[in-house]
Amino acid sequence: MATFYSLYAPYLKGVCSRYIIDSNDVKDVLQEALIRILTHVDDFQYQGPGSLQAWAGRIVANEAVRHLKRRQELVELQA
Image (cartoon, rainbow, N blue to C red; front, side, top):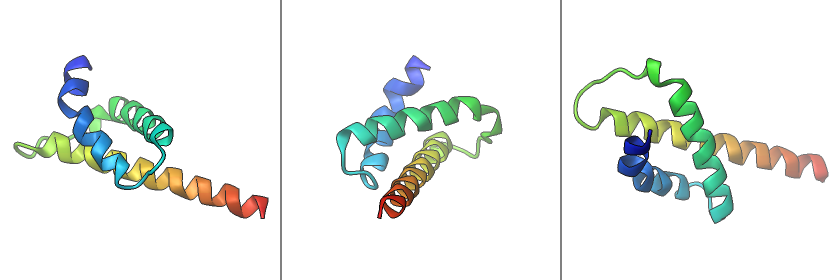
């Protein structure tokens, strides 16, 4: 895990930052995404160089969108 993190964390943080502005939220979303990556690593199918990065990036993007939807739902409930 440490090797994966050191290799891909900067890229994954960049992906997350395209969706999420607040740095604390970026950390939270990235943590949730990393948990999802670790728990679903068996689903990964190698398709050549860069496929692991692309797969992990897609998970981070999906987690960021999920975070934004949850936040919007909370705003709508409070209104």
